[in-house]
Length: 313
Image 1: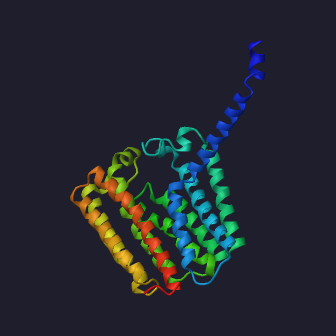
Image 2: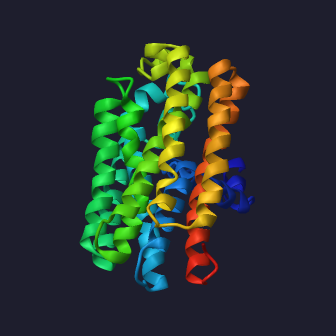
């Protein structure tokens, strides 16, 4: 009697449970894509596409941005598959889908591999194979060079491996032009130099996490003082390289007058962390570094449009 009543009475309950389960699965797979990281990837890729010479159909532009996002998410999923052992140890990552049991390791790997191939194929068929090859190279670099080779072997992991996150503006440019030129390589260099101080600010106040997991991040291997020094050096180098679009004539005065104060604030905050690497100061530097990259690439886009409109200097 009770079993029968359960099967026919609360007919909304099983449906709600199924909906909840489907929703949880969707959220788990979305988390595998590292959506917060993907935001910066998509944004910088879009700016690279935006400033490229020539024109592109809006639908093809949307497809290119989608392919960049899918490729970044695919690499993130494979990264989570490979790092599932240390993710389970680290406080920052222990609630990721694989350690939490939301998604199995095999499912994450299969998802990442299929999405990788799909993103490259879409980019090649819809846009061009130069952009597709560059996208494939960025995925391979993140998975094989950074995740599988460098991350657990050297304190320079994020320095060299950071190149993986610098590819999007090059991919966006290539999607429009079918070639790779100096301007997108300068944008690549900006992100490349931005990555170490951005990530080391996080690593400074999460060093116990990395130490417990046995990951040789710079604060674990070389200590706080050396990490503080390296943050300042890379931030200073970033400030200089960030002026290249203006110096080389790719961008105008609007960009230059944006890059100077943005870089000065970044350097001031890096020096502040150099004086004392408190958790609050490191968190503030980490948060500003994200704002910095958004604002700097926003200035690239704004300057581009103002120059087209005849208002740039």
